[in-house]
Amino acid sequence: MAEPPQEPRGRRGVFPVLAALLVGLVLASLGIGWGLPDADHVQSYHGGESRAVGVAQQMDWTRGDLEPRWRGEPFFRWGSHALYAFHGAQWLASVAGLLEVGGEPATWTRRDVAHGHLVSRWVSVAYAVGTIALIAWIGRFAFGRDRRGEVGTWAALATALCPLLAYEARFATSNTCLTFWCTAAVGLLIRASRRGTAGAFAGAGVAVGLAVGAKLSALALGAPAAIAALLAAVTRDGSAREGSAREGSAHEGSIGASVRVLAVAAVALVVGGLAGFLAVTPYALVHPEVFWEHAVAEVLEHSREGHGLVFSGTGNGFAYLAFVNLPVSLSHPLWVAGALGFATLASVGLARGTVPDRAPALIAAVWIGANLFVLGRAEVRYPRYLMPVCPFLALAAAYLLHRLREKAPPPAGPALVAVGVLTLAWAGLQTLANVLPFTRPDPKDQALAWFDAEVPAGTSVAFLKRPSHLTPPIHPLAGDPFGTGDDPRVARRADYRWVFLDARPDALAAERPDLVVVNELEVRAELRVDPADLADDPRLARRAEGVRALWAALQRDYAPPERSFENEARLGPLSFAWCSRVRGWAAATQRIDAYRRRAP
Image (tube, rainbow, N blue to C red; front, side, top):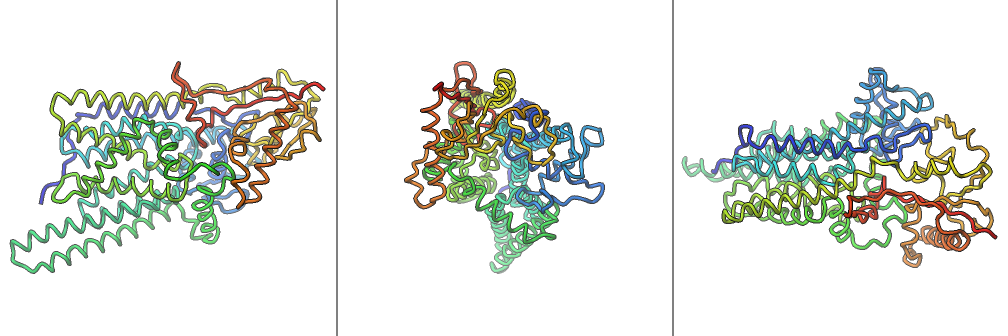
């Protein structure tokens, strides 16, 4: 039986990986203070992280209080794993006097809330940088027979420059925690498929359980886990066949050995997985009914159906994945290279005979394929759900380059390297253009400064919907998820008249507000979808019709926007504004318009 490829030795290739880690750290942390709670808003400008941070900050492990709760109720809509990681960092910050943990949110100061968000964001950045290191390790040990670690180096650079990883890493969410542990799990499954021991599979199972504890979508790891167990059994069968031929023993012994390896691997994976999951989700045993209720809502509703009109009429799930989400998540060149690399991994993994890269190629290809199939089939549209697969598409692109350089004549080598460099450069430009807006004043803050400076007391101000993280924090109750009630704007802006239009077509004529403040994200879906296409959902159809009628009245009775506030994803002459049109990708590039009523 052929020896498996060995991990490259020595320091060759280490410095490019260290450079990738540094680049990844810089891109992931640029503008990490964006949208933090301050004197003007207690909620982060990111719609999801305030709840996660609040749940984590209510815990206090020194008092044995690690139950995730939201407003006094058990909370499992977010994986507990990331919440515990956030709480660990928050507790360390509390020791340094930066914030308070434990107790009720109403007792926290704005400083506590802001610092709770900030340290949790740094945890997310750390997971992102750790993912770059993991993919470098996988590339080096799994595809390292050239002893140079070339695949790992290119994969680390591509992952560091991946737009989606850098974009999501600055938010205190479970996404980078999930990505880190999924990457670790696949790497350990590759190693377990070679070793074939119970300990190796148990370790991989623990990583799988920790990933599922971060987000239930990691259950897709079951596919590469099954392949890894089967490969270990087949490898054991091949060894037993060689022994049988030498010793003249019956072939049945080899089959029996394979079955034993498969059974041991399966048991070790299940036991390890349960141990890892329960280690970071222990309260699922205390509140099983609430856990399952929240789990079903997260998997079946939030990822696909829970966003009203947001994705109505956006076409086939696989087409949306291929032509919208993957290009924005990886850049067009890196996505094409990743797709070709995925096909290369699959062909190598399914090849007959003894192929050194067969096991790691097949496991990586199955992980990529399982994710893309589930996301496309389930019509999941948010780009963030692609995060666990992006490092492996980067690995696939690196493997493609490596295979082409192996097979190409020597004169073609520099040209292939140049293509690889240009692919990474374009991905880097797209990433930089999309993270730089986080370093500039947010459009909502720009609108707030204009409002305070130029809108006099007594003005009637309308919002299309109830104030939230999408609206400028000019309303006293805009975004207070903790119920702290300590908003100084209540007194400061008491002389304004506030109007909530709530998609009522006659609201503008009835209320006649002087000023209407609109975030274009609030109406994008309603104006895009034809209400006639929503016949199967009368509630959404009525809402779309109401918003359209309200919008028509706004254009008729109000002057063009008196002021518009926005940040564009741009690098000099290169515009990446198309990225901001993808839902889930416009956190810092939303446009805020202020319409003033026409004079009679």
